[in-house]
Image 1 (cartoon, helix red, strand yellow):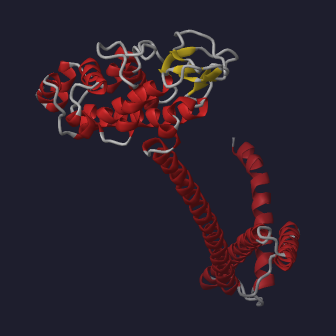
Image 2 (tube, helix red, strand yellow):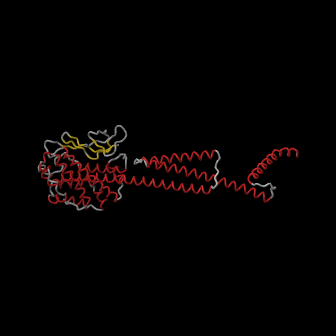
Image 3 (cartoon, helix red, strand yellow):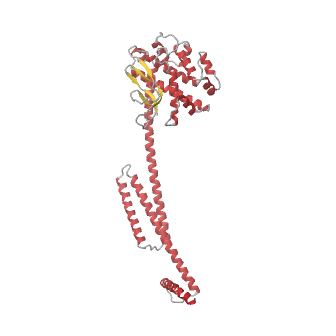
Length: 421
């Protein structure tokens, strides 16, 4: 049994001897003395090995620091290269390009040094500090470039804002000019019967603008009163899938238009009254007056009747009570009076615009005007319709509901505004 154990241990002893010889060889190269290894000498020997390992780790740390600093230099130079392209700076591009090439060359040399294990460094601590300084400089350079880019983008946006403000002012001036022409005693009053489809279209734009302002106010009042806007929109236009939540306002707009334009093709707007009264006289007088002033002066006029009739149809008693907590406005309207509230004033402006548009449609015997609406499910036609939302991707979009009715003005078609699904 002993002989077997000894024979089994023989190879291990051989390996141990070889390892010890190797250690002695390392010691002979690092520590130049021929004295036997005592206990103190053995401790010193292992300390020297530990110091050597620490030095090698420091050299590797320094090498890695140089690699990262060089990579960051490449990144900073590339950022400079991109910045110099807009606006084009030939000298800046050339300088940045040279730096990129130089730093890539340094990276290649570091790679070769690592592969060949030539990582000698007499002062790795100093190398690490210099690499960190270089890294911080590159980071600072990148931040400066980023700051310049953001500053350029800000200037560009400022220019766009100035341009858009100018366009907005131009459109506002144009709208005011159109509004002045509609409200002033200009060509319309001088030759009321010679109106053109363009005159009618301009008046319709002003009417639509007034309706949308009133709808916005109405929705705001409903939100303050904690109405369920989604449920209300669904009650007006059921089973409609809206591409955006804000598009539900079109349901309310469709409701207001449906009520206000109902009876439009009738000369008296389906309201009992004197159908023989001169339309031009009422048109010219009403367009230059505020609704309140006109109704106060002429409480029995066709417009006054129209205003009272449409309000009582448009604003349900339950809705008015939930919005305002009472029926005061409704009671005043039923008594033929003009409620002094922002809500009713906004409605009265809508009534005025619709009534003036109606007057225009009967202004000329030579041009016949009639309104039309598109039924739900009809295929979209850009001849008779204009979409208030983006057209769906599918090839044959269908009409979900009519928002603003269309009109035939002689042989001219004023497109119906529809919501597509």
